Amino acid sequence: MENEIIDYATAAKYLKEIYCLLNKDYFNNELEDVTITIQKKAGSFGHFSLDKVWKREDGQVVDRQHEINISAGYMARPIENIVATLMHECVHLYNFSIGVKDVSSNGVYHNRIFKKEAEKRGLIINKHPQYGWTLTTPSPMLIDWVKKNGLVDIPIYREDYMVQVGGTGGADGNKPIGTDGAAKPVKKKCSTRKYVCPSCNLSVRATKEVFIICGNCMETMEVRE
Image 1: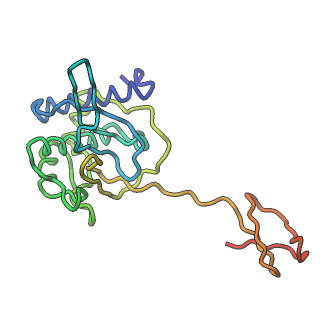
Image 2: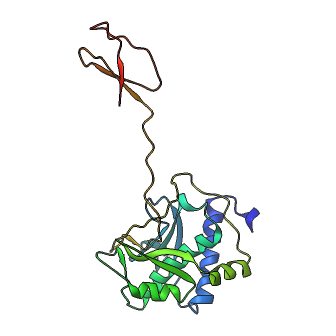
Image 3: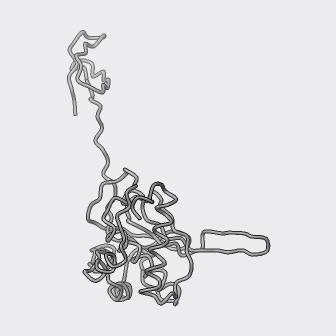
């Protein structure tokens, strides 16, 4: 299928196909239909919306769906890690559908209920000191499932974030919950340099090393951090 994943639309369709496979094999098709998105989401690999934020109107028929998002900046990960993120969010959806609360502290702390249900379904869950049982990796069982179904890496992604080990939270209402260990993006250092006159403290900035004379004092300006 790798050659067929050529743009956002086919990548999202592929994720939806994986969602349906997970639903069939791990949830007995008990999960409802959802909208899969690939959006920029700093600080997490994915999220699940508590509210049904997607709406489709067809005449008198109105269909509303929850959203499961896979962060666009982390799509370059191996497919087994993408599947683990998707499974993580599926567990949130499952618990929500049966009325079980698997997060607390305003929707950011993953409790032992989440850990238990996630580990039933091929995830390895480790504890983050602030966000609870949220750090997610695929177990050998889930990796074998990925191979058995012939799933392949997704060759398109958004170059926004550096992937690191860490953790962060979520929220309630129509805000997302559920992360599995993404760290906040690393800010790039500023490439400009500050030059200051040693006599009058006049300052200017330059994008490269330059030789500058202060017009007021005729002194050579010095680089300052």
